[in-house]
Image (tube, rainbow, N blue to C red; front, side):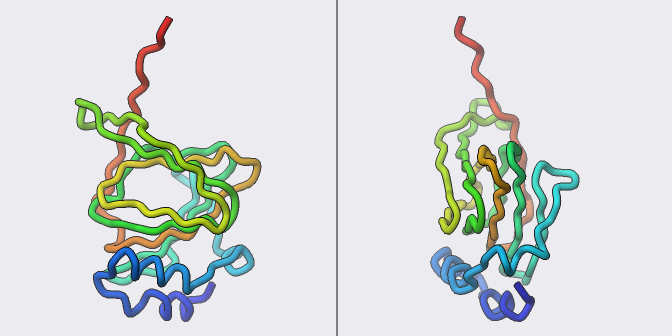
Length: 161
């Protein structure tokens, strides 16, 4: 994956629609052979994260989610995005807020496998998890670039005895 390919796919996008952003990601056709040298190892988070390309309108991020790791529930602020799973199977968990503004409860779970895309709405609260036997690698594109993201505490209902 070189800067020239990223520039061709995303450089001319100014305030793209979700369809335009997805089209640019599809045109990139990222594969593991191209991404291998750039895969980030986790440091301060349960996943590795590397910004591959950024303009004032678009950000392209490479994610490495090792086996048995999970992000904290979070949103992407005012940004929307497309995420392409390049390797592995990702569990994407959608949350809704409880009566406590800092607390969320899981509402939906989907599985996204190699070659599949999923869309993240502005303000949508979600978390990602890797239950598989191999790392999950994804290429994520956001518009505008991520800022004002917020993390939440997952609500665990009391046990029923």
